Length: 357
Image 1 (tube, helix red, strand yellow):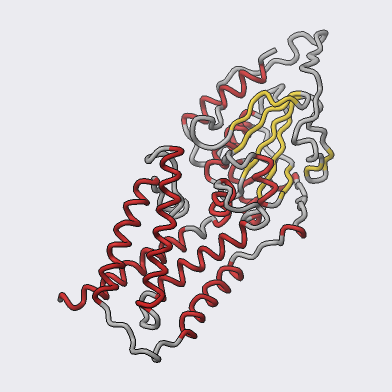
Image 2 (cartoon, rainbow, N blue to C red; image 1 turned 120 degrees about the horizontal axis):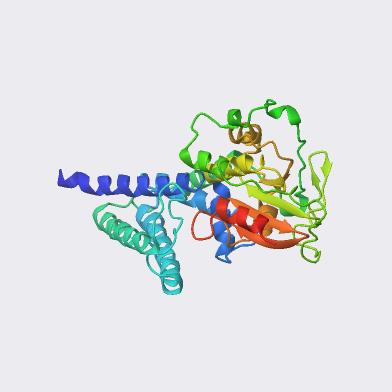
């Protein structure tokens, strides 16, 4: 049994790198964003870097199982790569704490703190050293570099074919049409709730109405009009909109994001109340084919526009996360919700801000 331990260790390392590479693919934009947030890349170079790094991890997963240049290149290179990762993790732990955040080692699939990732890499390095000492390298002259080259080129080609993207200088903002018929018409607001209606939905329905008819003689002027950073978005479907004029709700959503869908459901219910501001959506161009499903499931037939991934994150903020919900009044940002942590979307808080004078 002991003689099989080195190969078992190689299988463990292979599975570790294969899982790490695959996990970063879903969604790959999250890994791209992480590279940008870390100031490793710009949004123009992040798509290339993300695919190259993932390709390296997948190539290592297969290269560790074959025998060509195993001790001369594959194992030393893998150890060096893990040391570089640990140096980066050490910096992150010093800046933000050992137990804060997700290192992204396994993408969004398996969240892992920097300290957990550091320990994982130390264990992997120890296994690699054990493999190095207990495997026999090929005789001089019998190693064939074409095998390693084929593995890496195949991995890279797979990544760029499976996850195509537009080069930075050719990316354009796509405007998708807005169709009223996406959702069936209804005369009873109770019927807009999906089958998994929760008590939270019911509490939203029972919130006090925003009464804009109480005193028609009073005209709410609002704060002084300013030009917001969202001003350039003026076309949502077939509707021209001035986001700097009056009260507006601007949502920044990803079509496949569950948290975005939850926020959209709440906003959809709130929008049925008199006096609620007009709602518009900026969708990230990732799984854009899911937008009709998003609108149908959330019952949120709001005008929308689709923008490319780099522009989406620049608009939301590179350090921010989805879902993003912005309350604007004459261009002034009065509420800005983002992510799923401290600054996550809050329906009560939004309603209070809208009602506030």
